[in-house]
Image (cartoon, rainbow, N blue to C red; front, side, top):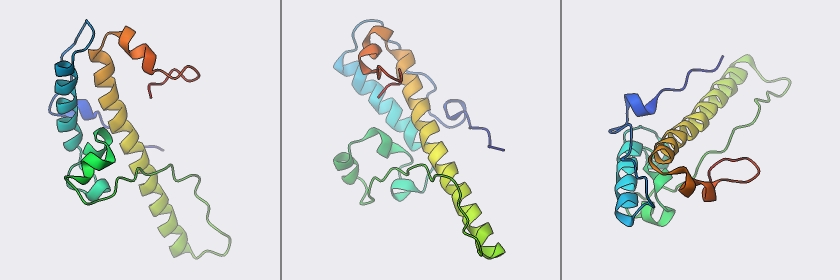
Length: 142
């Protein structure tokens, strides 16, 4: 059974909402949102991206992140299904199962943190300015 996803906005983020802008967002509003989202992303600990800045790497270009951390920005992919070859020892099978479970947890966590940050931004912007960012096939925001 999958573990429940934590509510990062309520439990870890510095701020759970961004100031709402009903008109076209200005540079100042966007900069303020970006800074607030960066502060929130840094509140969620991870060993990814060097382990020192939480999920800040999600909000910075790799070149910008390289200015504060020597760690590479490599987003983990979904680990796929767990495949244990026949003849694998019980100990090795358990080790593989634990490693797969952890890889899946990390994958889900990074997506949940990103979704929470994105949700905050969507709530702060008039929907007319979000529509251009939506994928026509999936309706997701890219």
